[in-house]
Image 1 (cartoon, one colour):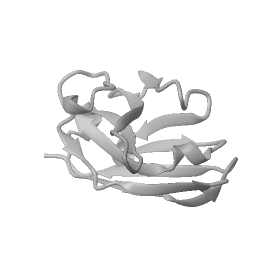
Image 2: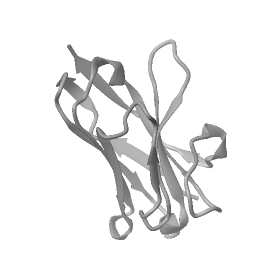
Image 3: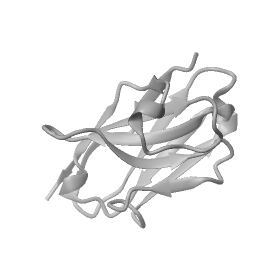
Image 4: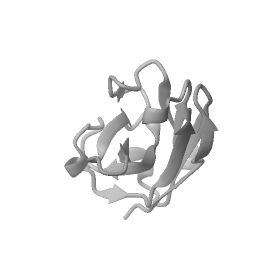
Length: 125
């Protein structure tokens, strides 16, 4: 079992930065790929970024590529999402998710076994 807790959300002006953290419990977290997803009001949950076991396999949604960076510190059981050059359209609840099995992550929400409770990110114009 893996439990995930997100933190780091908040209110920021457009062009600003935030760093989200996803802290995990469980000794096997280093063997879980992780994804960040987000959901804005009235919209479906969408993939943001993913990272594999070791941190070497990362990929991003086109909408955040070049602005967001996902990373992980397995010694701390934590995955990060550094968000720069934030835009109002980045406003959403951000969720991290983890899955056992393949070493690589996925952009398919249904492929994840564990989810955090979410953290709100609001970007003002």
